[in-house]
Image (cartoon, rainbow, N blue to C red; front, side, top):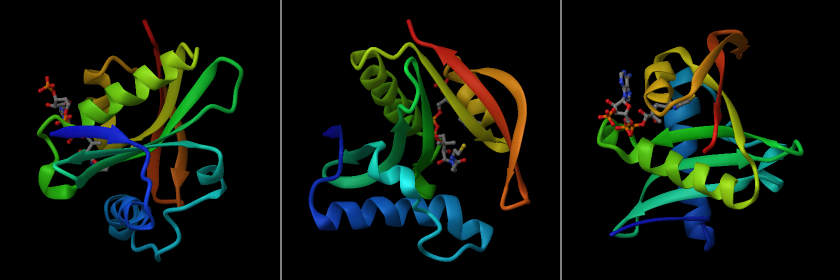
Length: 144
Ligand SMILES: CC(C)(COP(=O)(O)OP(=O)(O)OC[C@H]1O[C@@H](n2cnc3c(N)ncnc32)[C@H](O)[C@@H]1OP(=O)(O)O)[C@@H](O)C(=O)NCCC(=O)NCCS
């Protein structure tokens, strides 16, 4: 059974940040702790579980009156390409809509661009370089 929720127990939070670290920071040679930032205090956290096993994570930051930003989207490496990314993004978009937000923005890594385009995100253009090494691209989607 698939469920998307905010982690609850300490064990679930540890697994959440561990997945974020292994998928998004470790491949860049970054140390543990680099996967967290101050936005974790205020962000809305999504964790996708299949039969209670964590598979994907995402965070939604609603810091603007009408726009939210999706951040730290990651799927367990051996389970990528099986629809879990789409599934957690749908949950993120539904939650944003439920809260009255109608536009999502994000900064995608170059290799994630086709994934977000498939989900209906529009490319704005290059934005920042993470750690001076990984080019990101700003994208947006107006939610129905
Ligand atoms: C990017 C990522 C979140 C996508 O999640 P995923 O579970 O692998 O993607 P899905 O299987 O849900 O793919 C959804 C759709 O996008 C397409 N897609 C995904 N990656 C693609 C790619 N690199 N090129 C072309 N299409 C792609 C899939 O074919 C699928 O299309 P379909 O629904 O028509 O079959 C995941 O691969 C990941 O964690 N990558 C490493 C970390 C990362 O890059 N995170 C994003 C940071 S910006």
